[in-house]
Structures are given as C-alpha cells and as structure tokens.
Image (cartoon, rainbow, N blue to C red; front, top):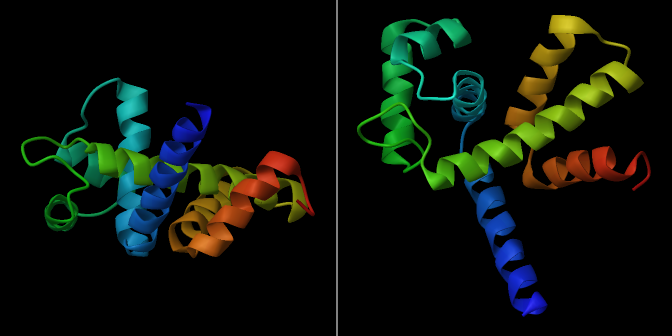
Length: 143
C-alpha cells in the first residue's frame, strides 16, 4: 500500500515537472500569478486583475490565457487553473520560494528585487535546476 502511494506521488511529481518543462517562461509566470491570486482572493481572479497583477495589457493577458487553455492548464470557462495547471504552478512556486531564499540569504538581495528575480529564476529553471532549488531549500546547501 505504501509503495503504491509512493509510486503515485512520484508519478504526479514527474507529471508536474514535465508540465513545468513544457511551458515557456512567460507561461510559467502566469501560472504562478494565477495560483497566488486564487490563494489571496479565495476565488477566481478576473482577466483584468490578472493583467494588472502582471503589469501587462488586457489583450496580452487574454492571449496568454488562450494559450494556457489550449495547453489544458487553465479552465475553458473561467480564469482558474485546471488540476494540471495547479500541479505545475505548485512546483513552480516551490522553485520560487527556494530561489527567493537564495536571493535573500546567499546573494543579499532584498524586497521587491529579490521577489522579482526569484520569480524569473523559478519560471526559467530547467527541471534539473528546479529539483536542486527545491532540494536546497528543504535540506540546506550541499544537499
């Protein structure tokens, strides 16, 4: 039973990593923003609020939402992550938290600058770097 659960968890993690690897840096930024906004508001953000959050135009946000819907990461009728989108966004957010810790603790970058750089690093990290970021945060340097 425990082996079955571990196998399922491993398969879900591998699927999430594949979905992270399959998105562009821009798509990853939108996924993380949607996850953040859904958590903060406790509901679905509007397209306009998403555009404001990411400091892009409404048409730019609409085009990206269309792309994410085509990829099956955002629901067709709402500005809401699908289960696959949520899974990818959670992995990306874990990478972002690890990158933020590196920005602050190792590089001495603080505030909005650290958050901005951490988001870009998390969004553009390869699956290998992403795994190492998460492992570093969980176990410390050298893990």
